[in-house]
Image (tube, rainbow, N blue to C red; front, side, top):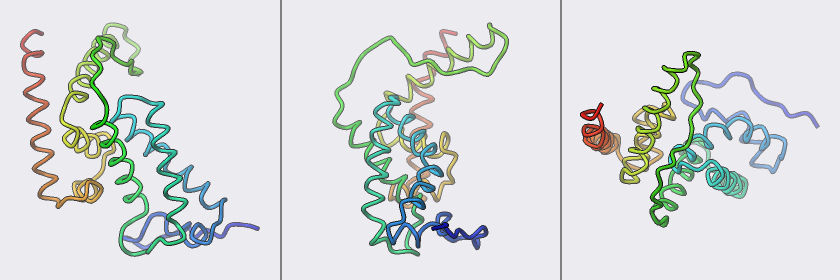
Length: 192
């Protein structure tokens, strides 16, 4: 059976509206397309928040499982499916971060560099490691706000919707997060 997918979607509709009818009726091929479409975004969100790629994979797998079970009862028109999935991912990460006991280590995960110059590459790697380390110790909700807005490149409105708060409240949270990060980085910058 061939999957019939519309190519164009009117502005403002669910970006996964082309797959929703088939998925709501249990079509595994349509759900597989949804997974292909969003696994990268959700994995990046969870990995950024948790700092652990393997744990992020577990959380994203759980999110897709919840999505599959929810689909037969999904009500279109309320929220976009990807917004709901990001909210579930964010909440699962926040829950994990609240339960996790702090682990103190000097080891910082490596980030790939696109620079060819070894000196620049080393400097960028060090800056990224310092920034990642400072974001990791921030309060969970501030960390989530930074991740959604800057690393997931979502709008203020989308980020607020995912965190289930008003846009003005999200803007305030983002402002506090930037202030916290700036305060954390000031002593490090003075040493440079």
